[in-house]
Length: 109
Image 1 (tube, rainbow, N blue to C red):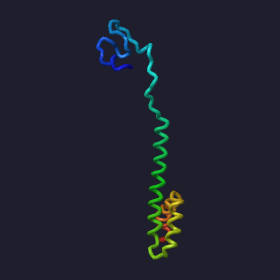
Image 2 (spheres, helix red, strand yellow):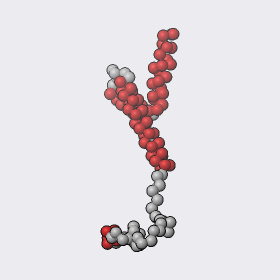
Image 3 (spheres, rainbow, N blue to C red):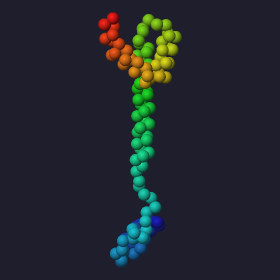
Image 4 (cartoon, helix red, strand yellow):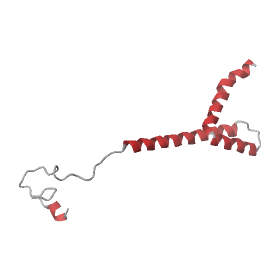
């Protein structure tokens, strides 16, 4: 589109004279279609959610593993921390079972 047609009031957007009232959008289709890709967006949201879940669970399990036994040696804490971070969802399940299920078992025995 030339710049002289944009400023000219006697021509329409397509460069034709405005003397004729004709809808040219049917004859001149736009090549660009603004289409929103829901599948890609949902996939990105799902992937970011999974990554955030693993980061949060690794942080919580690592904190719990480091502070579980405060008087241990540093290398034992590091090994426990490494295992807790690598297997964080399983370790969080272990923390849950240990603190809720077996808490009452100690009182019985």
